[in-house]
Image (cartoon, rainbow, N blue to C red; front, side, top):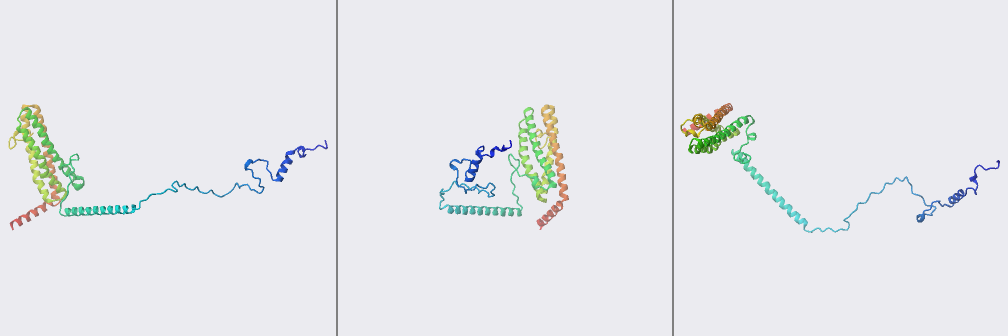
Length: 307
C-alpha cells in the first residue's frame, strides 16, 4: 500500500477533463459555445456590471412631425377687428352705466325714490320692503300697521261672503252690491290714503307724511268702529256685518246670524289693533321732535299766507 496515490485524479489518464480545461484556458477558448454570436477576440472585455451612468431620458414622440398647418394670412386682421368691436361695446356700456348713475343720483338729491313693485311675489302690485327700507327700531310697528291694512282687506272680504249668504237667504241683491263697492274702494283707498304715507314717513322721517297718515288713519278707525256696530244709517243696514245686523239676522236665519257675528268680531279686532298702532306712531312722532317741526311749518305757512 506504500506505493498507492491518495489522489487518483492527479493522473492525466484518470482526469482528462482537467488537462482539456487547462489547454482551453491557455489557448483563450471557453467551454461555452456562443453559436453565431460567439466572439473569438481574446482582447474583448465584458461590460461592467456596476456602471454608474444613468440612462438617457426618453425622447418625446412627435406625431405631427412633418405635418403642415394652414394659417390664414388675414387672421390677425380679423382678430384686431373683433377686438376693436369689443372695446367699442365696452365703452358704450360704461357710458350708459355712468348716465344711469347720474340720473339716479339726481333723483336721490331731488328726493325722488324709484320704487319697483315687488309685493305680492306671485303678482307684484305694490312696492314693499320693510326689512331693507325701514329703520330697524321701527320695523315692528310698520309690520303691525301693515297687518291692519291686510286686516281691513280680510274684514271687507268676509263682509262680502256674509252679505252673499244673507242675500241668498233673507235679503235682496242691493246689500251685496254695496258690499262689493266697500271692498273695491276700501282696500286700494286705504293703501293710498294712509298706509303708503305711513311707509314713506317711516322711511324718510317726513313730518308732512306723518300728518297725512294721522288724518286718514283716524277715518279708518272710525269706519271700523262704525262697521262693528253697523247702525241702520248712512249705509244700508245689512250691508255691513256689525252687531246690530247680526242680532236681527240671527232671529231670521241662524246661519246668516253666525256669519254676521264672525264679521262683527273681525271689525272689533281690527279696531283695537288700529288704535294701538296710532298710539305708537304718535308716541314716536312726538318723541322724535316731528310734532314741533310740523307746528313750526304750519305757523310759517300761515304767516306767508297772511303776508
